Image 1 (spheres, rainbow, N blue to C red):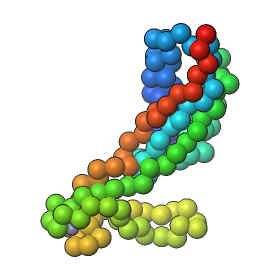
Image 2 (cartoon, rainbow, N blue to C red):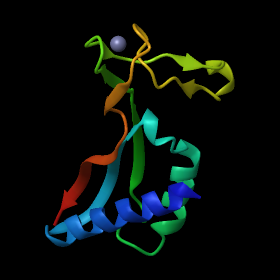
Image 3 (cartoon, rainbow, N blue to C red):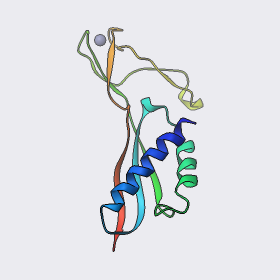
Length: 124
Ligand SMILES: [Zn+2]
């Protein structure tokens, strides 16, 4: 499960960050995941729950925000969102990785990373 390794990296970096500050407890961690990471929100929350047990993050809430994909086209200069295959209502939507305007090659400029946006902490 890809989510487990991603989550373990996130938890490690959050705990590293906490060690550098004098923090009583953590209330919430805000995570931003890009659509192009293909990470499942449920799997991330599950991994979070299991992996924060017996750590400083045990009682912290994980908030997940999704970041839409944004691309730039090398051929026509298009910048913006992309088109998807499939039915959104069923959740298996496949991003089409070519320019929606000219069909050219695109570069993903947003939506491919998974980062901690902020930590809500209680200072000691
Ligand atoms: Zn284009």
